[in-house]
Every structure is written in structure tokens, then in C-alpha cells.
Image 1 (cartoon, rainbow, N blue to C red):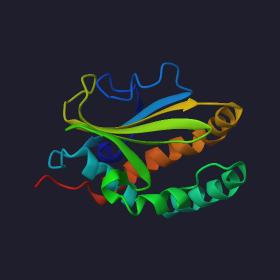
Image 2 (cartoon, rainbow, N blue to C red):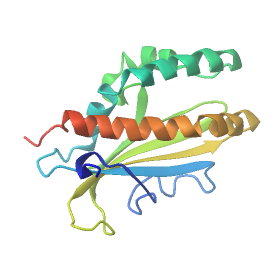
Image 3 (cartoon, rainbow, N blue to C red):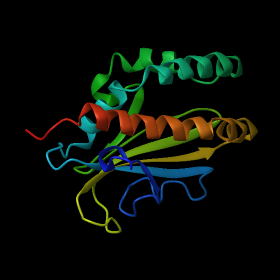
Length: 180
């Protein structure tokens, strides 16, 4: 039996998330959720910083492979994004630009020539969840601009799902930051 504290479930985009209606016809829209312990912080920025700073080593290796493949197409690499984020830490989580912050959600993302994407880290109750409690839901929406973007999304979607699920599970196993 799987430990519910580290069980990640695919769900619909949260109705109250700011990314739900961001793109009229997204090329990718998915969401994964995990239950938060009662003592976890309610700060979505702190939760997202924790999750991204504790990712498994294989995710970094996968990003390096991705970077070497996309650099020839003139797409932004994670290394390039990290370099620009280094000077604006308050405007980024990891190498993702912060687009919006609310009490329950932080919206991150990036725009590039092949696609735009937004990633929401949303904490709160889920109406459909049995037993109540608070959940952290990571949602991704993508709008492709061209064939390169659509091909890219087709190729990375299985890896994207593995990365999101792994990141949520790993953060839960380590232990989410607690409320102060």
C-alpha cells in the first residue's frame, strides 16, 4: 500500500488557479497533487522553492541532455535562464520567472520562440478530496507558437510528468517546510 503522504495524483486544473484560463486552447494542460501535512507552511512560494531545491539528481542530468538538444534550435537553455535568474532571485524560483503571487498560489513560467508556459504551485483544500486537508497542486499550461513547439511538447511530455511527480514525492519524503 502506498503511503498517502507521498502519493501523487493526476487531477484537473484547480478551478481557482490563475493558470486555468490563461490560454484559450493550451497544447498541454495538466495538474498533479499531493496532500500536505497539517503543519506545512501555507506559503506557496516557500513550498515551490523547497520543491525545486530538492529535486533528484537525475532531473539535473535530464535538463543537461535537454539543453544540449535544444541549443542548436536557438531555444533558451536552463543554464542561460539560471544565469539571468542569479541577479534577480526575488523575481525567480529556481530559473523560472515569477509572474504572479497570491496567498495560495505562485505562477512561474517562461516565454520562448517555440512556446510559452506557466506553472502554478497552488496550496489549499480540494473539494473532491475525501477526508479534507490541504493539498499542493502543481499545474502546467503550455501554448505552442509553431511546429517546433508542438514537436517539443510531444517529446517532453512523458518526462515532464515524471519530473513533476518525482519532485512532489521527493519534497514530501524530505519533509515540507513547516509553518512558523
